[in-house]
Each structure stands twice: as C-alpha cells, then as structure tokens.
Image (cartoon, rainbow, N blue to C red; front, side):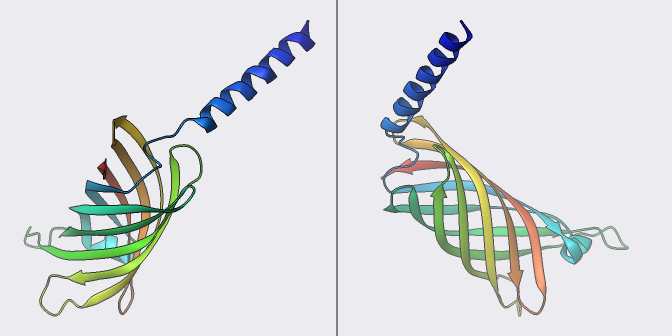
Amino acid sequence: MKKILLSLAFVATLGFAANAQSKKDPAMSGSKIGIGADFAFPMGSFGDFYNFGVGGSLNYQAPIASKLNFVGEAGYLSFTTKKDAFGNTFSSGSIPVKAGVRYFIAENFYGQAQLGAAFSTETGGGTAFLYAPTLGVEFPVANKMAVDLGARYEGWSNNGTTSFIGLRAALNFGL
C-alpha cells in the first residue's frame, strides 16, 4: 500500500511540475514598465545621522534570454536626518540611476544585480557609484499587470561608502 501511495504522489508531483513549466507566466515574459515606492533604512555610519529614506522609481525591463531580463531604473530618494541638539531635522535628496539584469530563479522569484550612479540634488553633493543586489518576487494580478516586491542592499561609494537596506513595492505593466 505504501508503494502505491508513494507512486501516486510521485506521478502527481511530475504532473504538477510539467503543468507549471508549460504555462507561460506573464510576470516573466515580455517588456514591461513599473512604477514603485521606495523605502530606505540607513546602515552603519550613514545610519548614525539619517533615520530613513523615501522616494519613488520608474523601472523598465526587457527580455534578454529565457528567465533573464535587462533592467533600467531611475528614481528619487529623500533621506531625513535624525534630530539635532535643537530638535531640527533636515533632508537631502538623490537621484539614483541604475542598470543591470534580473534572473528569475523560480517561477516568480528573482535575483537582480544593478550598477549605476547616485546624483545628489544638494549643492556640492557630487555623484556616487552605486551597486545594488536584490531579491524579490513578481507575481501577476491581472492581464499584463504584476506586483513587484523587492528587498536590496544598496551601497553608494563617494569618498566613503553610504549603505542602506532598500524595499521597493511596484506595479509593473506589460508593453
């Protein structure tokens, strides 16, 4: 009896896997554009002076190969300082511009790597080289529409390193 149940479970698993591989997931196919909200949580010495960052971003994806997409992204992040001795807070802004690749590890789960530059909007702020490895999930919610949730470590190098954990929640639209 155990052998029969084990055989049935094995056949069912193979059938499920074949069905999952044969269906075309709209979250993984075709070019798309996404609009998202970004949240940043400073780390290290950057976290000693700044509480958090918020902003938005636009993302473009185009297929390169099976499960592999080119990703281009630009946005705006504003970081708010911790209170000073007088109880005041200040904010500073940056425009990060990134390009890289997104690889779908499983049906809706991806790993992403991006490089780019962060342009300060402050006078004399300069430009920093940036890198951002990301893990995320992108799942369809309607025809040619997907929700994209990602978590990343982002580092900015310009006379020292600024780093933060970033979260992005986006809505992607198929083109």
